[in-house]
Image 1 (cartoon, rainbow, N blue to C red):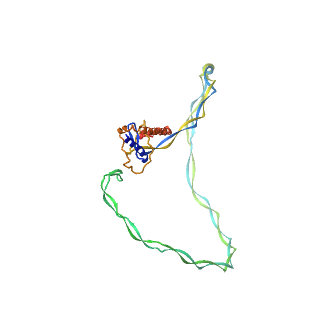
Image 2 (image 1 turned 90 degrees about the horizontal axis):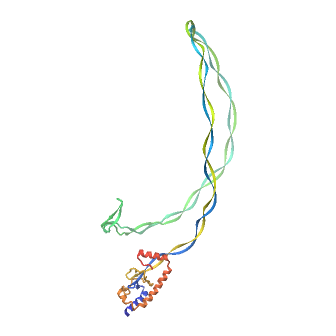
Image 3 (image 1 turned 180 degrees about the vertical axis):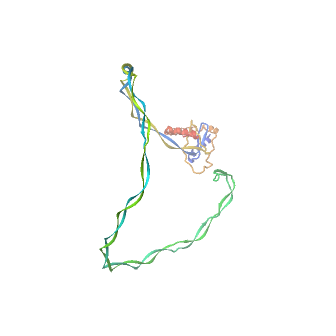
Length: 471
């Protein structure tokens, strides 16, 4: 019993110091050793009560008098007066006088004499008058004015400018390449050759067919580049040097000299002279000529012809006859008829109506605001790197232990405790375990009170979805 108690005491003392192994009571029958922790980040939500105002609309009822007009139909009798026309037929006689034309035949002698015309050809002299244009030449004079320029010579001194050239020497900068050849190392890539190599299978895109093809593993020709080599090569290295070179140029110079010049200017003079010219005009002259003309003349002869003709004459005669006449006249009578008529009348009615309108009101309210924050949690791992599942009834609490970098020593790791051995060793060390358990339960309760309900629900949900214990 003393041996087991000492062993448990050593494990409790060395575990926090080494930070490697620590036994954690999972249940009443089993203890689990904790070798390290896994850091897990979770998001929890802090709830905060915030007071604000929101705009709401309330129904407000107001009594209001409204006058409406109701439609009422009434029947009333109206007199309809109209005029009726009745036909009245009357028969009378009248005398109708008309004229009749009667034919009367008579014999008459009609003169149907006519003129006979014949043409006789005769020759006669006829005067023919024509107008002839006769030319008349007259000599006239016209004045011709000519402007003549007379030369006037005058000597004038004039400035004459001419250009002379003088030599002028200037210096200009000339850049000369005074470089040379230098030996440099140049890298030359090696030749690329195809070698048989074993390659793993994989998928590749075939550009010809446009499909993804599978390349089987095996020996394939793979391009391989040989190592390159450095060669010594002569390269030209330029070196630009500036030099001052004299340049002689001919510079133009303007020189002014007085030179006598004969100037000739012309004065205009107007000369007038008479120039004769001939003008032809035409005069009209009447000429009369005798011309023989053949003319045909009419000769009229009278032919007598008396003809007997029957003539019908119409003699007017008046005839009287009696004609019966039927006359229809209209007699107008006025009639009165009573007709029922539907009359529309509007009756005013006043009633009180409740008018409902929406009134905006700012109403205070309180809502809960969830602020997310990230919580870092440590999940205990056993000596084999597995997560320790803690039962909800008796949650296990792991005391913090410093982490040790590097591999875990073999002599510090302990094997899991057998449940039968743990039952045998519970009785001697009951006092120390009860004290430690009470302290750990107080720490768990303090942590639970500090965390909000939202974080507990989120952690429980995450624990159920990921099968990890929530602390």
